[in-house]
Length: 249
Ligand code: FPP
Image 1 (cartoon, rainbow, N blue to C red):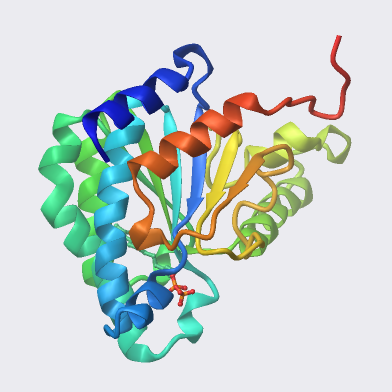
Image 2: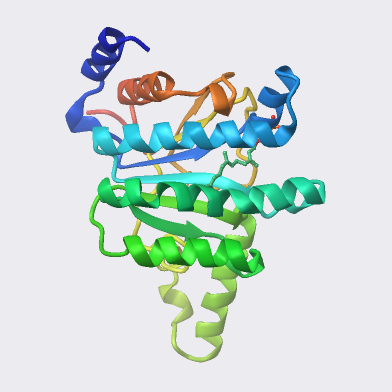
């Protein structure tokens, strides 16, 4: 993108209406690779470059939280070689990027059932969580072995346990108490969800949290998605009329 076009787009984005939390389903890596006659893993590798660009832009415009869907509880159904590669990606990404993320004051977090991750992946993730723990800038949540339904079921189990043990009054359970048992406690729900690749579905991502999230879909495949598309998505989000079930005065 030319500097002039970038400046124009940046001007369109209202600084006082930046979404606090943006969630992204990084989709289309496989199709991108296929279109180019490349192996699927080349698509995931290219997707990692997009991730870098979007994180940098998010930090620049002052987004507080970004949540990226990196591996779903259903992605284990993929061929073993692809699962193996997808599990190596966080390790590769964090090894390469941790210094830059520290410079940008980014906090890394992970959501999902991390117990099933390979040992090396888990230790790379834990190292990043620990290293960035005291940073105060943009928070990045990586959803790894994440499933919205599993998250809800886990929350139900924790709540039921507390009720059974007499530590929680059943009549006190409401949506706030429930949300405190989800992976991202205390984090505001996403304001905007971006899904590239032309698919018009949620695919088990943040099912509870997206009740009033604005959706932005595009046909662009994730490896082709860039700063310009991201700024356009933010700009379109800022034109939406969010009523949360109420009416405008
Ligand atoms: C979906 O595309 C993409 C994924 C399952 C993986 C996305 C992960 C990354 C881009 C890198 C993650 C990096 C870190 C640091 C966690 P797809 O394979 O379903 O594409 P297709 O629908 O075109 O086949």
